[in-house]
Amino acid sequence: MAPSNQENDGTLAARCHCHCHFHWFKTLPAKSRANVVTIAEKAKKIGNDDPRKVIHALKVGLAVTLVSLFYYFEPLYDGFGVNAMWALLTTVIVFEFSVGATMGKGLNRMMATLVAGALGLLANWVATLCGKTGEPILLATFVYIIAATITFIRFFPEAKARYDFGLLVFILTFCLVSISGYREDEVLGIALKRISTIIIGSCTAMIVCVCIRPVWVGEDLHNLIASNLEKTANSLQGFGGEYFGVSKQEQANNDKSFLQGYKSVLTSSNSEETMASLATWEPRHGRFRFRHPWKQYLKVGTLTRQCAYRIEALNSYLNSEIQTPLEIRKRIEEPCMTISTETGKALKEVASIMNDMIESTSANIHLANSNSAAENLKSVLKTEIWDDTDLLEMAPAVAVASLLLDIVTCTQSLVEAVDELASLARFKKLDSTMTQEQRNSFRRGTVQPISNDDVQHHIVNLAE
Picture (tube, helix red, strand yellow):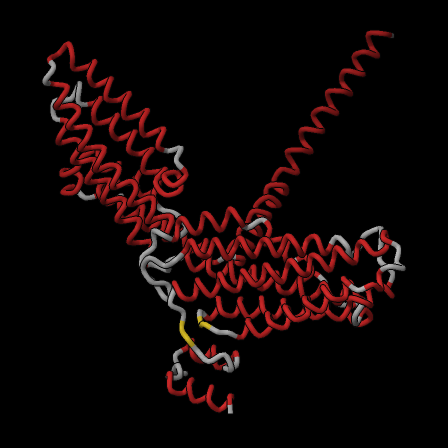
């Protein structure tokens, strides 16, 4: 009986195993369809979130197709031969999403190839003067010196930010030209063909990137800084009502996500630095002239993050375990609410200046109100009404007041930085009494700036 049972068990196990495989094979088409649908939904979402990505993919396909003509047409292929492949490789490597990144890579590759190729030919010629015995030794010495020196230069922050790709190409090109010249007799002709195809590939990528729906990284940086200012202002204005319980019933059913808007500001440092570095390669376009002060944007972004860090510290007191009693908070409610509201308005005015690229002094009005409220808050904190208050209960309120005072100082520096940016970038000048609709009309070109005589006339009437 034992052998018979073993055979039955084995047959049953085999049937179960075959059934599992059959079930997996049967469900395979359904799973494949589900995967295809999932991938299609992701692709649709990416395209809807940023249609520029779809256009970028089409632009890369067009550039690669244009360069591949070197292989399809006999006259072009006869002129460059197999070296035409360098144009194709260069186009794929150089073409980036934004104009700044593409221009930076393209110019770096062309200049590095030209300089390193010429230097490699010179090193090869000098090495041949030393005879067959000394030629490989001298070439190896040149390769060692160039590779070590350029690699060390890549550690310099300024060089790494702007020329890292070019320095890497420089090492590669010099080594290829100098070393291949030791075995090749026609190294000059080969080098010229490769340099020519690399220049053609780089120029093709840059022309397609600039001429067909360009993506300007400088404009993205400008919009990012303005958006960060707007988010910081919204979070700051919303804090006062939350902390002091103003209109608490009205806000109960509202979305309070704007209170957390500052969090995205805290993590934008690397993006801003990268964008500012790439924007320096871009030519003049739209509202951004040649040699636009992109570094000043980094200063504005840094000051915005300093305000955002203080707002993060303020928000920590909204749900703190130790809460100051309401009657104590009432003592500082008025100046703190004024600081929160007026400083937020000042930040919004600064964001409006950035968006419209129009100089305005309206932010200074709100900042003056914030400074006045800050002086009142200091006076309240110095009075003797705190003597009969428990120090532990008073500490959170004092911390909130201190952070708000720091925000006023930080906002003052931020307004000055934006004013400096407006001066360096030559923002348009308009009367501060103009409405937002008039500013938008000016940006569309339907409103002309007022003259100096009109400004003087308004000031005289105001004085009278």
